[in-house]
Amino acid sequence: MSHQKVLIQHREWITHDVIQIRTERPRKFSFIPGQATELSVDKPGWQAEKRPFTFTNISKTEYLEFTIKVYPDHHGVTKKISELNPGDALLLHDVFGAIHYKGEGTFIAGGAGITPFISILRTLKHEGKLKNNSLLFANKTRADIILKEEFESMLGHNFINILSQEKHPDYAHGLISQHFIGENMRSRSRPVYVCGPPPMIKMVMQELSGLGVPSHLLVKEEF
Image (cartoon, rainbow, N blue to C red):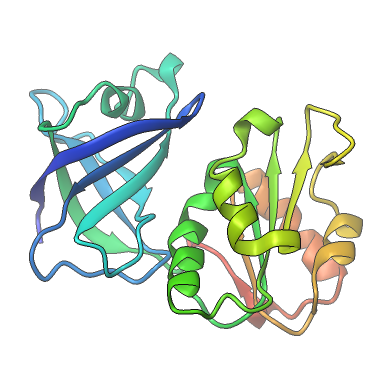
């Protein structure tokens, strides 16, 4: 498809720099949890400015949801989206993405890299299949943790956070290291899902290789 226009139904800030947008869902529109699309703003001068965003609703809802980190200093698409209101329109483009659920394992996310995992984990909860999946989530500070209460409710002690710029007695401190992963992953013979900024992905892949995790078990976006 070229694009489909969808109207915004709801918007809210869920952290100091992350906004959640819900839109209409076109008839017969489908995606696999973990997949994304490109969005653009249906306003003059913005229609051609497409950016990739992941669906964060479960696949059966009547709406589409996007959880978007806003970069106000860039004066770009995310800032423009954050200024929209219910009734404004976005242009929805093709669906893509290599991150799919391939079985119980460990999810490793950095910052807004959590977004592909939101739909996957919500879907597993909805279907009663969360089991022993675990989430290792790296952020700068506690204020940056997206959907903290929801993940705590879903995963309990299998939701493990690490902060790079804040020390707190309830959280690990530093970067996602080989030691941190080794201490917190349940198995090295089950899938490991990785998403985050490219430097973080590169580092985590090296750490997983050092732990002996086979490459065929690694699930990440293909660039």
